[in-house]
Image (cartoon, rainbow, N blue to C red; front, side, top):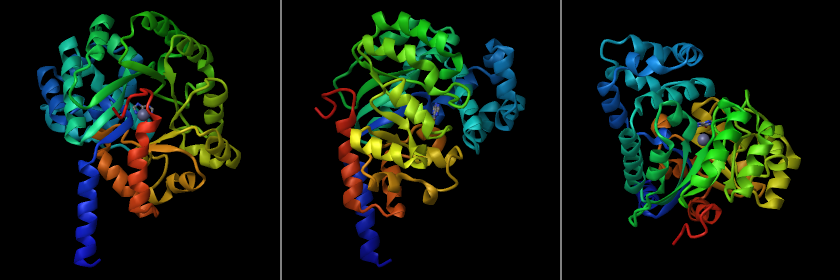
Length: 350
Ligand code: HPA
Ligand code: ZN
């Protein structure tokens, strides 16, 4: 590469970093600042933090070597980096879940929200839809009213943050429905949508039809994690049974050409998180990721980081990484600006 080529590329990346951006798929705890987590772990050692976990959850967490090491360490805060090394979706989900045990008071939750806003601001993300796994915080004993108060704050400074409630499929469809019934009358206007994260292979999308019907009646916009752990049939269920407007991930739609055409024709956007899919083992490498094929087939998409602290990636880096798959700088600029149009808040770009 010539020097001038290298300089051009560096200034293009700097331009991506500086430009106002939208991010539609990232999880609140997935963006937990590492220092903040370390500080919480110092305040409450893991053995004590996990004392409240039901035995089945504790066993699941202990099966992950990184978590077992943290639990056994003399100075657990020093072992935390191991939490960010995993090679399957199951291991990642355990690491992600583990972090909730350090959000013990409503002030911890508020501190997390402040830290994530700062993470977004520093990247010039001016609009973000942040997914918040409500049942996990309730399991921690946080009061629902306090959580909703924190989510309802809408400071005038950028980023403009809108919230997507994750009912966490691992608690099952009945619990999801009950919680949603409780939530709907209380939600502040900053909460715009619904999703389901968690173990897709154990609780596939098709089981949650009633939950999504209820959400629709209650005025929530709808997306769901599908086509990540499971194949195209889960995306069909998301569309036909849940009637979602966007799909979280959805990348395994590529395995069904009829589905790819359907997404393109109906203009259903995918929330694509390339690094996440590689780090959790959905694809072995970025080179094997189908984002380019989906793009060429005309499937609308936004590019996202999903869990930036765990995957060690910024939104600008995620976008720039598409160059290696054959995207031109113009196409990448188009993806960055196009994300605003898929927002659930009609005034996202304002
Ligand atoms: N998939 C499912 N659940 C999640 C994810 C994900 O990528 N990130 C956080 N919770
Ligand atoms: Zn996600």
